[in-house]
Length: 335
Image 1 (spheres, rainbow, N blue to C red):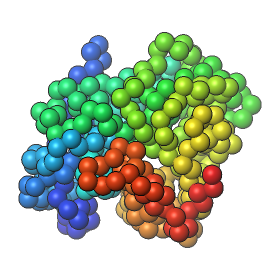
Image 2 (cartoon, rainbow, N blue to C red):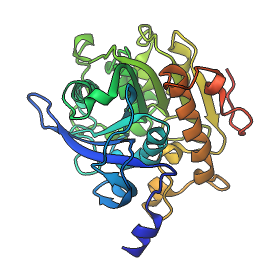
Image 3 (tube, rainbow, N blue to C red):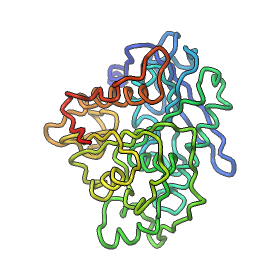
Image 4 (cartoon, rainbow, N blue to C red):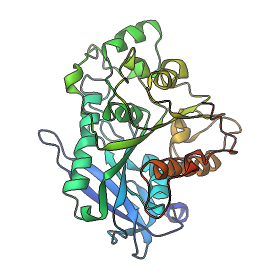
């Protein structure tokens, strides 16, 4: 408990946090964590998603605030990207992170099935509905400024939400010839069946997206991203063996009609985009030799905040070249 108290995340400016349940008609409700700027006094809060120095159920400060939805990766949850969520809240954003039903740290019943990504893309739209139409503090939001952040399966989810149409029939072919991590997630004896284009949920309210280490990139061949028109910041770890560049980020980068703001992070593996963690499962917390995840996340979070500020313009701060805030940080941002 002492370690938890000492290592709890401490925002540099007051951040509030709420938890809520989002209705998903015909399906289990979706739990969400919400971070936002506040004028309430923060304190030590121990949530199921982790310990933080925040104002639990504090007042929301500000008006016409932009909204960012965070979609975690397979087996993750809201705590997976809590440092990024808090960085955005400190910068004037409201951030909501759903715990994807059927694909989280407690329940993986949908993973590797034909409904896996269908459910995930629907969740994003349901969460946006809740925040803009039902959330008790919705009057603080600007419904015309909605962004989306996704990591791994969450990044694939984000691509679908902004107009992407994957062809899941490609999974069996890809796994037979060039197996990669996603092939291990398929349910034995139950091949993934493509549900057809009409099954995917796209959300036109999302006007900018940060895509980090997307999986299943090969399923968007040959033209599955042709309808994506929103600005995208695209990230890859140069040492990512879980979602190899050639069959994932490389394809997404090539197929996006509008060239993304691209970042390749030297020495970073797949989990480098998760919240820094020193005492946790090695598969999630251990990085390669010489890679400093804490230092990287300072740069990463600044870049994510700058991108959303540039494309979801925060009041009183002009849209500028802030999207290039990563210049001089040592990242490969080759266009």
